[in-house]
Length: 264
Image (cartoon, rainbow, N blue to C red):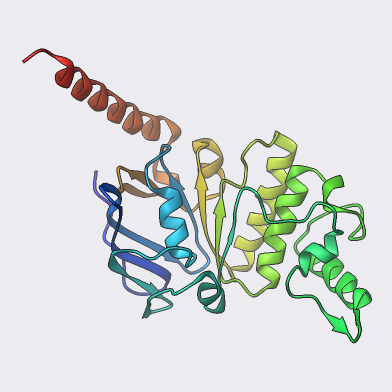
């Protein structure tokens, strides 16, 4: 299957013909990806398919070798993570970049602390953090507790809330459900549903769990060998179809390996 052609209008982000090499290794060969405004896009694929490389380019950590990136209708060349953030792009990695020993509200304002010279304006930060989390429907015991005391789902929710509060309009989530139980997954699903209902943020989710991706995403892209091989609305595909495509890839890889091992 080949990826569908991106529609030019109404997209928050478009990557056109992205290519990226690391020496002799081709990480991305010809990526065409679009993210609609207010859309949640699931980016699926096996380990080594190129998902993380693509996200690192989209957040400004790396640059593509070929192709162009269009944000809100304008072509840009991201120079850094800070440049991407200035355009409203933020990423939440699996490790979350939270400081476990700090309180929830201090984490919400990490590197953006409010100061009432010569001291931190803790009262203002505490109130804003409480209001922001409440507005997003994120329930925690208190913004005064250290992040280390919270569940994995609560910590992930705080990392997402921090990105949204920093005015992110394009949010990249790197496996937000990894190593979580059903209760914790439900917390993150509710946060993403809340963002979807408001339509202010466009989201790309890297995910290995097909069922969870289909539960929350509007559209699914499957990345294989550095190319997007499937682009479908989530309602038009299934776990069975996605599994069959990946299994077929394994079959071809096994047959190719067996051919190479046969004596000449």
